[in-house]
Length: 207
Image (cartoon, rainbow, N blue to C red; front, side):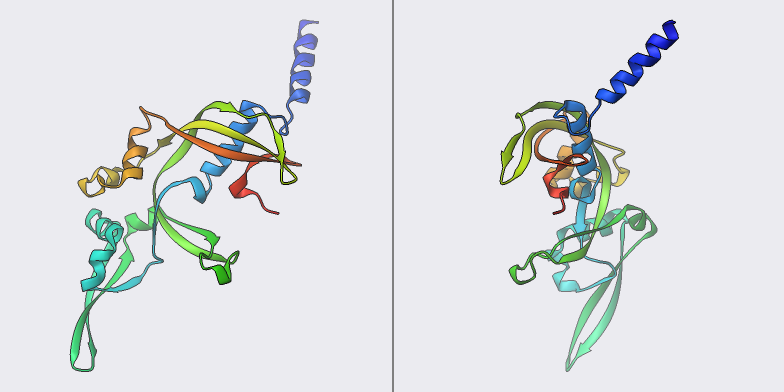
């Protein structure tokens, strides 16, 4: 008889679990889905590689210089002639370590005339963001025909790559904050939208 009662209780609890309910558990899942996407990952954006740049211009590509110094990007020099002048050109390509950190993603093209057109981008990632806690949220309300809730939460960064310990990255504020987040979770906020399948971060919502 006890087994029947317990089994019945499990079924009741399962039936009450609705992904459309405005609960901390559902919001945590929705925010984690966002953090696990490229839009929320612990990454540094880079040009698509291989990438050619003049040696004199490399100073403007701060992150690429850093990635070369820690072994994620390889640099090969060649001399190119243009008329009577010579120029040293660097061909930058990913090392094996760099390839393991590479993530491809898509985001809207930034120029107004092509807004909405998805373009391929590359990033080198150094960790994984994980939701720690839902601090509070607003009661769901209609906004522009969509039911939304604004959520305050904290997250941390797991599985941080060893190359981030190199001193060349100490000036990268976001990376430094991510490294510290294991002991000091980062506070952030999100706007979630209700769909027929449950709650979703507004940046992942598709009309």
